[in-house]
Amino acid sequence: MINLSEAEVKKGVEDYLQYAANQGKLMFNRLNAGDFIEVRGGSRRRIKGAEAGTADFVVYQAGEVHLEYMGKQKGPVVPVVFVTYIECKSSKGKQAPVQLEFEKKASKFNCRYAIVRGVDELMEVLKRE
Image (tube, rainbow, N blue to C red):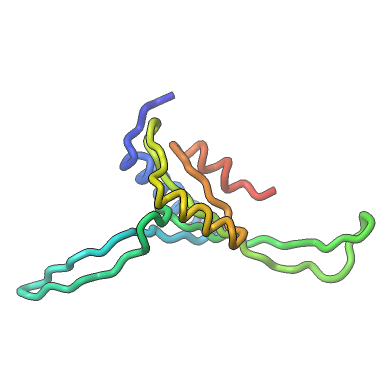
């Protein structure tokens, strides 16, 4: 296994997600936690980011649910969206307590949450089954 820094993992994940988005397979957003100061000319502006502990990316994938009763499809096919939060870590990186709390929150809303250490792990996570 290649030891990648967290920044290298994020770059690879973002490149892969952009490629998949360009093919129409998903939508994604890069989430930045914390507050930022933007300086333009002589003015400063505070920009509020996502709450502390928020995952690095959120991915939206279209899907559908087939309602069945006794092995036979009943009713219409129902469109759904799969929401997956992706946390990027280096090969030895661990979740901070605030990240564990965010994972619990996301799970309460039936969102998937995954820690990935490379694009190969991301590809497995994004398979819908």
